[in-house]
Length: 143
Image 1 (cartoon, rainbow, N blue to C red):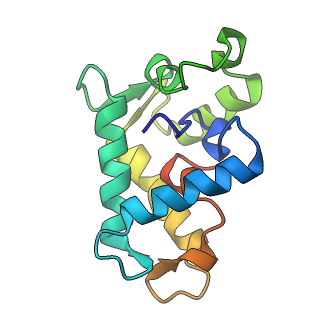
Image 2: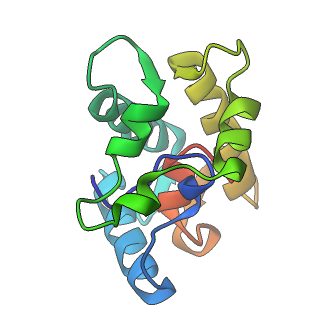
C-alpha cells in the first residue's frame, strides 16, 4: 500500500489534499473490513498493521529502519519530501523505546494498541467508520 506514509509524523496521512486522503482512507477501511460489517475488530485492525509491517520490512529483519520507512513514500513524491523532518525524527525516537534507530515489531504493536484505543471512542471493541477520521493515520505509527 503505497498510499500509506509510515514516517512517524507523516504517519499522519497523505501528502495529497484532504479530499484524496478521505477517499483513500475509505478504500483502506473497506480493505481492512474483511467481514464487511462496517466496522473494524481488533483482529482486522491488527491484521492490516501486521501486513503493512511485513511489506515495509524490506530485509525481513523484523525491524523498520528510517530508510525502509522513507522507501514507503510514493514514487511521485519529490525527493526533498522523502527526507524526514526533525519533527518526524523526534517522533520516531519517541516510539523507538530501545533507542536502536529502528522500530521492532513490539514497538510497532505498542503504537497500534494506542491508536486502536484512541479510535475506539465508544469503547465497544470496534472501530466504526464514523469513529475513524483516517485509517491511514491509524495503520501507520501514530501522530
